[in-house]
Length: 168
Image (cartoon, rainbow, N blue to C red):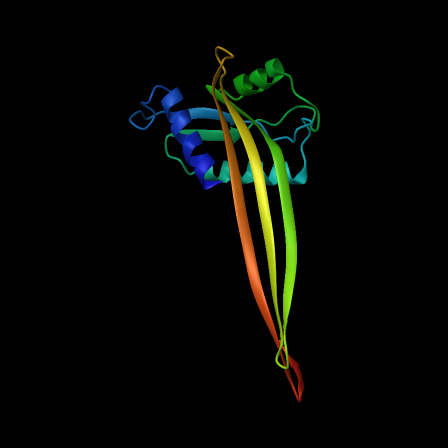
């Protein structure tokens, strides 16, 4: 998330002519809620939208607002999305989707004779996100960003057998 938000901030500032940080007027950006591959919002896409918004609103040269569609849950065509951006007075529109989101978990254990057991658990997550930066005035796509994020978490557990019972 950190990488795509940093790159996105740079693209937004450059797309505005590069003078947003020197100007007193921030770049006005409309962010459409992210959708899945079928064009539908889900709890995961809503969480990603909120996370991205929380990063973008901290940037001094940007004024980012959510562009909420009139009919939630429906697939928006480009013209409707641009009209939402115009209603908010935005110069740039962000349209994004989550192309893939996958999690995998695994467990493995090793018995230690007369002592107990050692277990390892791991969880791997991967997400692929695409964001289009669109000029509201011209309707042209200025940049399309695609980012892949991966994270692995591991934990180890040890059980020791004793006369009093197992110790975890």
